[in-house]
Amino acid sequence: MRLARVLPAILAVFLLLGALPSQAQTAAVGPGTTGLKLPRFVSVKARAGEVNLRTGPGTRYPVEWVLMRPRWPLEVIAEYEAWRQVRARDGTTGWVHHTMLSGDRMAIVAAARIELRREPSAGAATVAMAEDGAVTELRECEGKWCLLSAAGVAGWAPRDALWGVYPDEDVK
Image 1: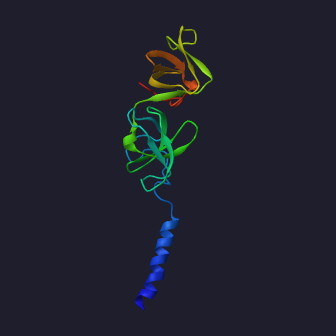
Image 2: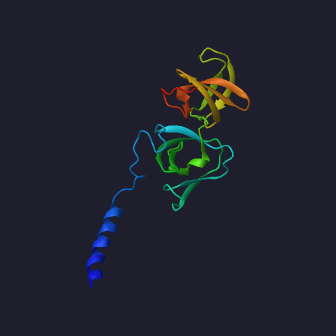
Image 3: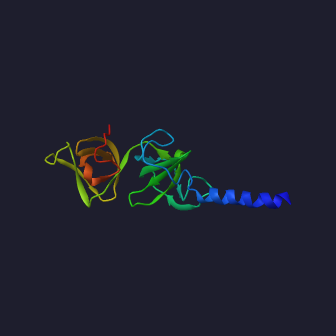
C-alpha cells in the first residue's frame, strides 16, 4: 500500500531528471575540465590507429564515425571528464577519448593550391606546392604566415589558406 504512494513520486523524479540536459550537452566555450582553452586545435595521435568518433562522451554511446588518419587535425569544442567533443574540417562532430588525441599541431590546406615560400612573404621564393586537403605539421605562425612541414619540406603559407589555426592565434 505504501509502495503504491511512493512509486509515482519516484517515477516523477526519474522523468524530471531525464528531461534535464546533461552536463556534456551544455558545455560552454571557455576553459574545460582540463582547464585548457576551448575551443582549441589538437590532432589524432600518430600511432592511434582507428579512432572511434562517438555520439556522446562514453563507451556506451554508439560509434558514428571511425577516424582512420593519424595526425589528422581536430578542433576540441567541449570536454566532459576524459572525453573531448571534436569537430573536423567538414563540420562533423563527435566524442573521442582524450588518450587518442595529441597536442601536436597539424594543419590542413584549405585552398585549391598554395605555394610554400622560403620566407613569410608573398615575394619569397617558392619551395613547394600544396594541394587542398594536404595535412602538414604546423610549426609556427608569424602574423599572416605559418611555417608548415611535410615530407621533409618546410615552407611558409598564408594563414588564411589553412584549417587548424585561428586567425590571431600565437603558434610557437
